[in-house]
Length: 316
Image (cartoon, rainbow, N blue to C red; front, side):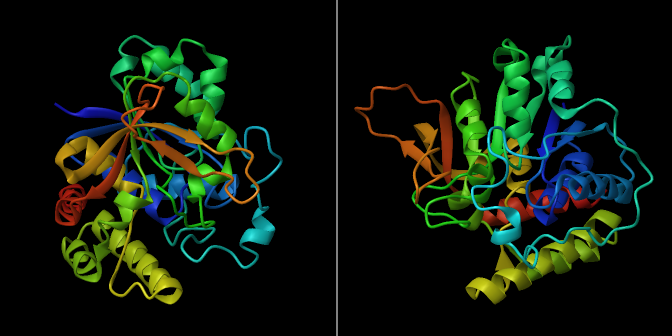
């Protein structure tokens, strides 16, 4: 049986790989995509999402969501200051053909509420791979939503380090108030795929060559996008011949739970006020903590199995 998934994306390169994985893997059914400001501005996120779905010829509803964080006017450091020359990893417009599909008229937060509150909607797995603004808004609109989300698998956070600051990962840092609201909402099954896990399972140039050799539109596109990421990591971090493809690991963890090789049950909160630690994920797995765990926090993943999962998807 297939697992129905709803993606909430800020579509840059790794989100694009995640979308193709969800749309094409035989064990997954992509039922909707909501778009949020993040890697690129919201207009580009929507356009890129439609480009990816057009490229693989899978039409699902695409919903425009939040164009700014939940309570802040912009990122903690505004985009124009953070990336004045654009992102190393995420072009404003993905190198794919103009989209044939169009976005839905329904906004993202309301679409999430409608999907999960509908009869049978509680079997959908919610997969946010960008800032959590849309999810927080949906939870605020419908108080009963948290109990209808049977599983949340998100990419975000880190344990004691970061990629946008020394303490914070980008998705959580962009909208820390939204992230804290989601993690405190009472959703009963939360799996967090942080930088710790995604960096432990990078995709290599050899993997890219294998995807391209599949001869499919998805295989060729994924190979090009991941190669661009590898170049970016090599230039910034001496990354060599491989790079993390963060967001797609969420889909691999749904199909192959054993791809997560190390994880802790923890109480996870987000720092919303610290001058130097804004957006940090506080992962408390002390046996004597007073709060119950609210998430499973992955620490390592199986690189070979993740690469194989992508090949399974891109054969179609």
